[in-house]
Length: 122
Image (tube, helix red, strand yellow):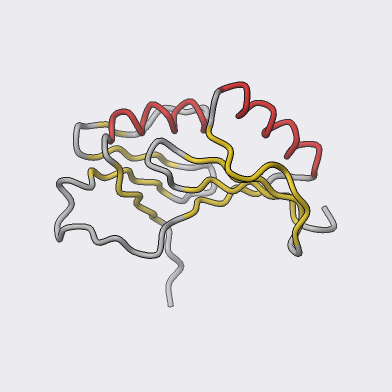
């Protein structure tokens, strides 16, 4: 099987979501239109933001989604947490230790979960 390299989040307003992710990622989208925006991530993965009102076939409500962001160590995690709190992101899980390491979770404007984690042992 080939590795997935492009992920799409269905959003209410792609331009507003692109503005949010541009600030979060520290980079401008490759394209931004009223119905779709796209980012090229440093890992080579692409992130698309598609209007949930115009996607074909129509979007269904699935099992939810989560974007996971790995950081190098708990100090980087705590720094990112403080930065996101200062920016006003909605935090749904404060930093906590879990089986896989230390983590926290915030929400984007469409309530997609943004999980930041430092893997155990790092």
